[in-house]
Length: 335
Length: 169
Image (cartoon, rainbow over all chains, first blue to last red; front, side, top):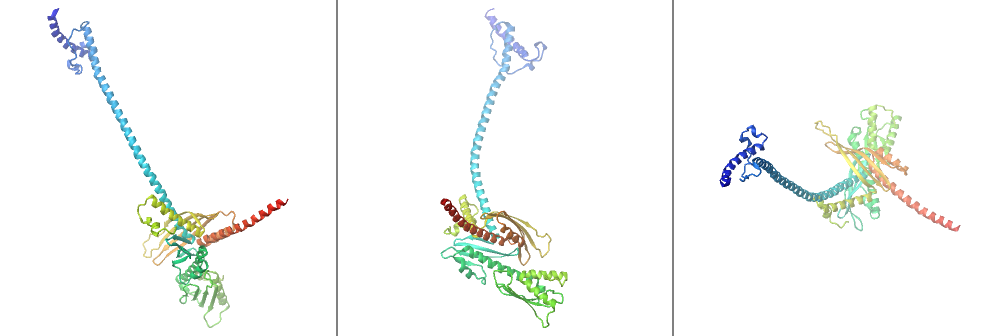
């Protein structure tokens, strides 16, 4: 054929090639070549690059076509391959990034957690101490229910004595002690008629406990007597024919009363003396009748029973029983 | 203990935020106070709790009486005797004054070895005399301790005698 053929081949080849292209493109798709599928459907941009170097296809046209087909397929697959390779690379990079991110987060969290746990440890230690303190404080408060309580001071101790009578919680008193040799009382709220100096002289230097318990006794007794007198004045004023006479220590009471305020009973005069000031019941009781006529037997009996009542029962309770008797309107009820 | 300045002991109480160190020293002081009261009263209170119930009537009258019921629970020991005390205090306040009354008193004790205890315990419960209970408990235990010491002394003497007796054989 010669050179011209070659050149001719070139152009012819070009034409063939372009046809081939179309053919290969056609074979690249599902549609059979002879179906006459329009070329635009067959256009595959990836395949349409200038890889095709014009040369004499060995093994004839069909072989060439086959080769082209194979090549096209490869190219069809190659971008996918390349893509998949790149995709894989991307995926790998992404996964690496995620792993690194996770690692960073983990380490950061680890650092934060260790900081946090240090803090929580501190907080919980503080919490524990706070709770302990609140607990101790409340127990200190609870000591007042034993009758004796106190607080440490810079000088020594301030003791608080609580008083009560028959379940009624009454006044509290304090004694501020200076811990020195000799022990002394800095100041206090003990009423002046309580023999504080006497008690201190006996026990303060040798036994603080004994000193305080003794004081407790005196103060509780005084509180109890005062309570009884107060109750009589406030709750049973109707029974009193005159004012209640009392001293500050409340160990000497004198009053005129009527066991039945409404009825026709005689007023009696009562005198209660509490010689033992550590007790809440009188030691000496005299009930007298303030009248000129002699008392009838029943009234005499009543007078005597009243004397007994005042000796054995707290003052206000005696009057409470009078009130109950009044309600029952039963004059013959003698205890 | 008493040499510490007044401020040192009580200052941390007034501050809002305390360090662990302040807290610990404050706690230490409070615990000393507790030990002191324990020694003074002879009573060791280990647990205490209280509940407060407001019983004030909701009616809007001029003479409104404020009523509060307190429920107290405390437990502890006096030497070898453990106790549990539950009591109620009814507090009511009208215009003039405030009254607090123990309305219920329950004392639980291990009544094993000391039958004398049950006597004054029931008396204290009857009279709702809380203070009397604690004072009596303290004196009773002291007396028991004294009796024990005395007895121990004689036991020792008798043991010595036994030994000598055995030796003679």
